[in-house]
Picture: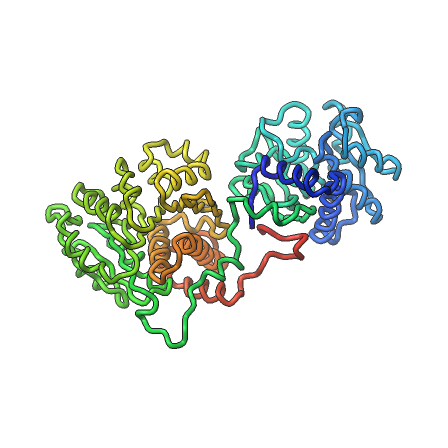
Length: 531
């Protein structure tokens, strides 16, 4: 599913109106009618009264259409217009005047004192429809609107947001001063980035996308998407009946140092759970016996080390290169350490190895200040950093990076000609050509040591099965989050460990491949995006 910024959506609206010829009044009618249909579905026992908080712009006009359908259905409804009537124009004015002719009560609220007079009545509403501010908001909410939003947010009344909760930035998901928290949000045309990214995702509640007649051909060039189960299911590698272990590739994981053999083991087992036919974990030679005990189905490869620190030596390059000649993918970094000789080894592999490569954790740290290695690589490279690791790689502040997650991921992918998997709530996958995929699966249970190592091995195992790097990255991230969601459903979002993901990964893969992941609810015109 495509995702848009506020500017993208304005351009789609403009082209639909000017190039296709759909009148803007029709778009508003479609938006309001669909919102009313979601209202009745999500609040089936609602008997009213419905209180519509309307602003003076098109968002308020959409709210007026909702009010009309509610009134026509016999629901008691009234509109609190937080503006003067003469400030309302265009299509919003048309729909406001229709309410007047139908006898629907519209209360003008030009100042705070008037709003406070009606606050007790608002408290008695069965539902508040938030149609105050739309997706064009780009500055903090102040004055009367801020007071209305704050007061409405304190009431024990459910809120349905029209297009977006008032006060939420449609592009970043950040609160601009103050914002309403909706139980249900109905957004128009396509979901907005700020409705998917935190904290916007939480403020939107149950998010629905409704079709307002934007033609599909206008949507196809958009570069940002939300990963969906149906598409991800199509990426799961097939398992032919006559296949053998060689059919599904040989993944190699280069990982581990003193105190961090668990990272190597987790990544190796995850590659196997991803479906790779064979997996070998390559580690410093003095740690090999430990890995032999930890791992049963996964093989191990001892490599030359720096004895005093038991970290991989530059002398490991010739035997490792020889071993990799007939392998299909390499994942490196989990628990690897950043000894100078290890850095040299990592940089040389990144620069010269003709295999697809997943680079995580200390692998990314070893590239700090040496990003030009990525530009020399003869095959695909997938970076899978958390924000702190990417900040070190770029020489940036983590807080600044987090404030611009999507932009930084896209810029890094383009500047270094690699795929970037920026981990976190709603993990982002960015491609060098500008494509961006945001992952909807996962939960706070993943905020635990070792879960990133599982993701590294998972993507490496999918690469080993010769999945395209863009597909391996997106599918790996989706499955990783889906496994965590299964655990959260069984155990709650706390207390499960990275190793628990390995246990449920086969179930997640099987369910996804068989289409057992529930599709978005509703028909194509009203689609559930996020629960």
